[in-house]
Length: 138
Length: 159
Image 1 (tube, rainbow over the protein chains, first blue to last red):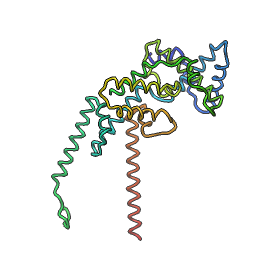
Image 2 (tube, helix red, strand yellow):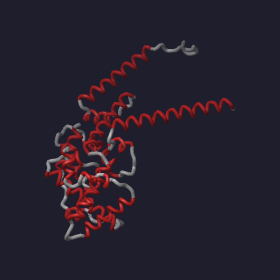
Image 3 (cartoon, rainbow over the protein chains, first blue to last red):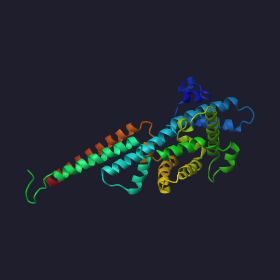
Image 4 (cartoon, chains in turn cyan, orange):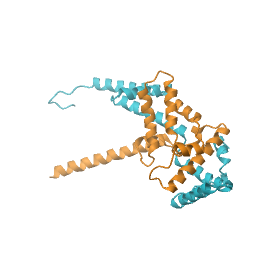
């Protein structure tokens, strides 16, 4: 059992997984009624609170991947935009600076590869025979 | 990488308000229904309890929670401020860069019903897969345009 499983297992019994992943309006109404029950109860909150938490934890988990993943994705997204800007020669200075700060050594290698491709492409175009006006290119 | 590290650090060290303090600092809004208010309070209780459990077990908040952590605890602005402080303490980064990084992230938190380009990628469970899908979609759009253009050219030629 991973650490994540362990932490959530304390609140969410694993054998209840399938029963708590239902979606749709009926599920939402069920949650809302439990909210009311939980919040109106002042003495015995034990079982109802655990039940509400089980369902809401599932709802929370279903909504999105981890924050860590999203931050990692954001960095990849910004670096991707930087590489695209570089490859299309439409660099925006500020964006480049941000991406530079974000870029790890591995990504710098990727950036260099883009530059190299760009240079090769430029050289290729420079070496091409320029067509004479009025004559078709053979 | 630095921005990401500081943001994650700010999330790990952020202390959630107690339930009573949360109620005081986030009063029921004008026009907010009673049921909606109960939902907000109940969700805060849940996120608070989970946050406490994870802390006790020395877990990482950023690994175990998703976007709901910010939405249910309503703590994004405090986390954002802490992140800015952490980054600026290093004295090497332009504040505008920090703002841009955090604003892109914030935009994906505020309106989860609005599927922006950033939201789709930043909250992707499989980043590469989303990229591939987008590439496939773009290819289809391009193929459609080429087909439409060819059709238009044929029509012009016939006329």
